[in-house]
Image 1: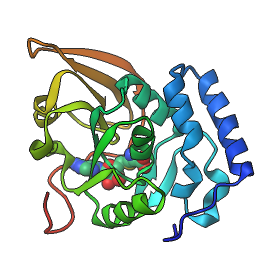
Image 2 (image 1 turned 90 degrees about the vertical axis):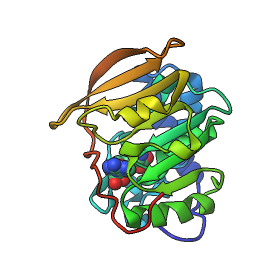
Image 3 (image 1 turned 45 degrees about the vertical axis):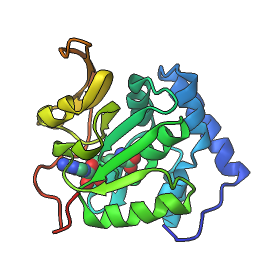
Length: 225
Ligand code: SAH
C-alpha cells in the first residue's frame, strides 16, 4: 500500500468486469451493488506484490492478522442492506476500507469502526488517497456501536459476532436493517434484523459464512472514541 493514488488500468477494469459476472452467476441481482463492485478498484486495497489476487473471488490477508472479505461476501452483505442514497450506515470492522468504499460509492454516508490501531491509522489515511474522504473512521470497540452518531439507517458487521450486541440493535432507526454474521465457532450464519415501527425486531437467516472474530473490549490503544 502506498501513499500515492494507485493506478487503475484497462486490464484491472476488465478483470473487475469478469469478477462481477462471476458474482452475478453466484446469485447477486441488485444492479446497484454490482455497479459499485465494478467501480471500486479492489486492487487498490492490496499490497503491490499481491495485485494478481485482487480479482479472484477469495478473501485475502491485509496484515495485522485480518482479511479483506471475499467479493461475493461483500456483495451479499451489501445487497441485504438495501442501500438508498444518503442512508446513514455504520460498519463494524473497517479492515482495508474496501467495504466502506462500496457503501460510499452507492451514496451512503459511512461511519466505520476498527479496533486494530495499525489498521485504523493506515486505512483512515488511505481512504483519502483513493478518493473517499467522506467516510468517517473511528478507532474503538464496535460492540458499543457509535452512540454519539446514532440512530443509523443501516448497520453492517464484517467480523464474526458470537452474539448480537444490544448496543447495535438500540442504535438502529425504526425501519433500519442490521446485517451481522452470528456464530462463536468457525462458521457463522448471516443474519438480518429489521427494526419494526413498534420497536420489535424481525430476524432472518441466510446461509453460512466465515469471518475473522469480532473481539470485545480489546481496542488496542489508550485512544478511545
Ligand atoms: N470490512 C473489511 C474486512 C473486515 S475483517 C474490509 O472491507 O476490508 C474484520 C475487521 O474487524 C478486522 O479489521 C478486525 O480488526 C475488526 N474487528 C474485530 N473486532 C472488532 C470490534 N470489536 N470492533 C471493531 N472492529 C473489530
